[in-house]
Image (cartoon, rainbow, N blue to C red; front, side, top):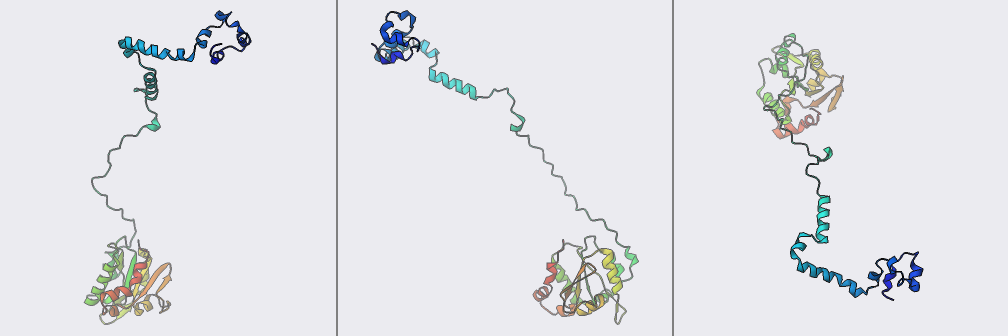
Length: 266
């Protein structure tokens, strides 16, 4: 009856006729029936014949690509983007911009302040007022400052404050001295009103007050045992008297003034 697989390609409408033997009568009505009925060995021999034809015509076979080569060419053609097709804008890397580093560094902008005319202050404040920087943030004062500014400065006190300013490590101009006394040649004269007028005029928010005598002049109501007090929005630190500090080694001087480093300056 032929190969069982011969019925696979038979139309369902013609299958009853085919199974009753009419395939032999109406073979012309079922094209390809003879090919289906051939034994499998005969159908498998077709590739061998094709190989023999290729061997007889090597030049023609070389010109025609194999199915595998043809598939590879098709895949490569489909995957390769057209050369003249523009990539979408979101997939393009923008060109690098030229460097805009300035040739010279710009100097920092100094804050605009309206300080009083230095000549509006009496001596010795007028001398200090001309040196106050717009960067000033803290006033240092002590009772003996009026004497040191009168031409009778104590060398050991000057050395002490130079050491403490270096220890603070603040930018130049952040600290300024502002007296709370004047020197009449033999004694101190309290000038707390001029001192507080300077605090207000220069807008400083911190004061370093050295010694109990200084505290009694500028803040007589502040407790003597307090390390820090706030007066009219200004924080004032209570520190040791400079005549006592100047007798100590530098490391002990710094230890007793360590509260200066805790101020939120800059």
